[in-house]
Image (cartoon, rainbow, N blue to C red):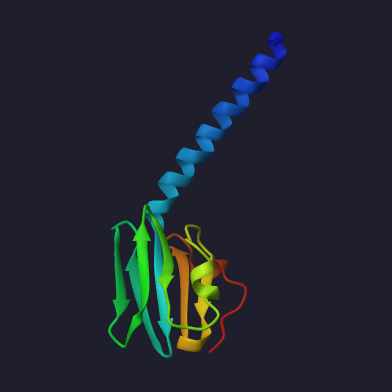
Length: 119
């Protein structure tokens, strides 16, 4: 390796580490929102565990390492489970047969950042 190659690799590694630590710090500003009909529940994604909603005990969510996912559902297509873990603001997964929407939001996002709000 030449000196320029070594410098380029070093810069890329340092840049990757900086990006990783910024993402780790931003994950503490996130929460999950579960919408079922007119019911909306907020969920802290900093605490690991599995749970289900009382009205839908056969749909199980899991929070692990600042990420949240559907891990089991009794719906036929399993698209919600196949969506995997969500860990960035704006990501969402839906279980339409059960009428559930799981989405990740940031505490730092204000309504000024939204394009449109529907009633």
